[in-house]
Image (cartoon, rainbow, N blue to C red; front, side):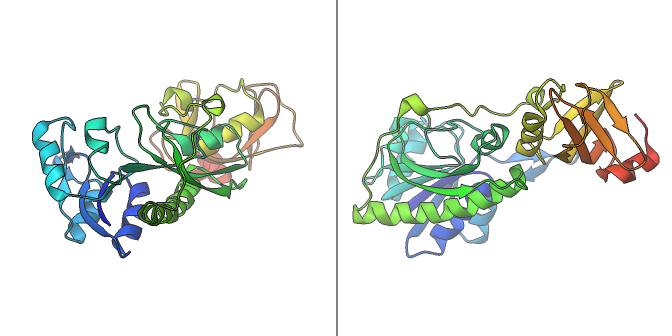
Length: 299
């Protein structure tokens, strides 16, 4: 099949690699416009564009998806199918162009965690299982009929970084199965149960602040869900501290927000429960283990 791939971040590259290495043909990629970064305002490409350039795949970077000229360019490629992974919302004028339609890869088991941050919210909500879903694009975000799902367990050691990487690889397999199934007309489309839907909105810095009013389990899940970026943090004496790694201390009972610090450990009370910080980073300083931190800093 002739495919146009739509995506931006590293998560999407895994799927693009799988399609590129298959018998199918990636005839173009669509990604975000370039940005300027740093003091020298260097031009920065998306990971998807970087892969496309390295493999001589044509790149489209529209500002407006509804622009008539862009839509006409899309039509000239005569693609059979559009594959969308970690990209912006496409209008019907675009996703209805190819004869086999368009499908999206989503980083959750839909209808759970519809939205921009499904991987983070699965961790924050304490889910034990997650996965990926491929679905046919529809007018409302993440609501289309489902082609297939793939599940994996969420381990206690997982955080956003590790789960992201696992789901990217799993997603690549799901994308390939979906393409082959669409081509052979062997994948029945199943409707989502909207009654089971839950939101996964974009993570903001404000959401990442720990105020010690949650249980220790919920606090730890928040840390796992936003590590390494944007990172969970707390403020003490007007100084921001980011927590990179922590565990539950089942042997201690501290009032919410109270600290216990000795030469080797930092423990903070939640509501209820006690969190032991294993890796911490003071604002403007490097990430350290708790013992390293305590040799040079005090709260």
